[in-house]
Amino acid sequence: MVWVQPNYWKPCSNPLMTKKSAISGFGTKAQKLKEAKETLKLDKHQKLDFESDADAFLRKYGIGSAEETAIEKYNEALKAFDDMEMPEEISIAIVGRPNVGKSSLLNTLFGTQRAIVSDIAGTTRDSIDAVMERPGQHKDDLSTIYRFIDTAGIRRKGKVEFGPEFFMVNRALRAIRRSDVALLVLDATAGVTEQDRVLAQKISDDGRACVLVCNKWDAVIDKDSNTYDKSVKYFRMELPQVRWAPILFVSAATGQRCNKIYSIVDKALTAHRKRISTAILNEVLRDAILWQPPPSKRSGAQAKIYYCNQVSTRPPTIVVFCNDPSLINDNYRRYLDRKFRESLDGFEATPIRWIFRGRRARDIARERNMNGDPGAGGTGTSFPFPYAD
Image: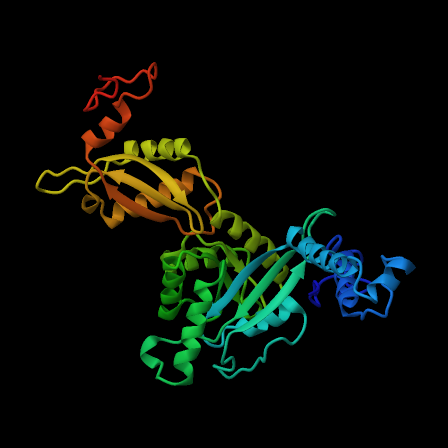
């Protein structure tokens, strides 16, 4: 695999491979493994490289340990690949409605004709995996492997009949689930449709990092200095499901801004794997509660939030402990999501999964005031008393 430079980049002496961009030590280890395999294939009448004439003569009569030595060398050559640090692979799914330019975007990123492009909607019938290796920014950095998944266009569920298109859509939806970052390709000339909202909700529900790629930006007419800001505001308003996703206006036909996809994907992946300490999360939670207290019902039941912590990543998952999860409505959950994104940096391209768990106040007080080790300064009393005879 090599880093294929798109045709709109600056040309170099060799457009297919950058000089000295191979993985360090890879060629030497592969050569040793090849030599070890050839050694195992030699018969007893041939002399091995690591044995003397006397050992070769004795081996003809089944005397000596040359065969065991050859097997050990082969095992050592295999073990060298296990110890080698391998480059990271990032799966990127290119999804969207039919005929929005997904295959054209893939061809532009690779600089070659990797997918068939046509004006007829539904040309791409199956998911296509295209792998690209990108060298590290610095000399000692490992390369990064990008696996782009070009998917078939996804129409509305009511228009999809059982047959080839049914399996095409299922494979496209499966590509979203097995990806790290999803590129939701939109048509800048047609605007946002209901199917775009459905796909955005699907990406958010699956917990995948998302980047909004607005294609055909070159076809937008009468652009002025305010067109960009108006377009960003429009897509933010029409796609509230992924209001946190960065927006990139590109043109797959001309290659405009397509080289910025890599940097945005790297930032989205970093946000998808971000972890925040419990102390900082609870500080943000306390400020959010002070600004707007939790809701209450007409019966007088008041929601109380105690504390929160992050339990996992990909996507970042935050568990909030409260007295009754049913008292926390959707409006307050969106409010907490917005306040956390405003107060914390790094969640711009990933959904945050919220889990509300009910706990009684006295259970939390018991855990905080429980007597621990001698001299720990506990103020409460547990039953039975831990230091009683």
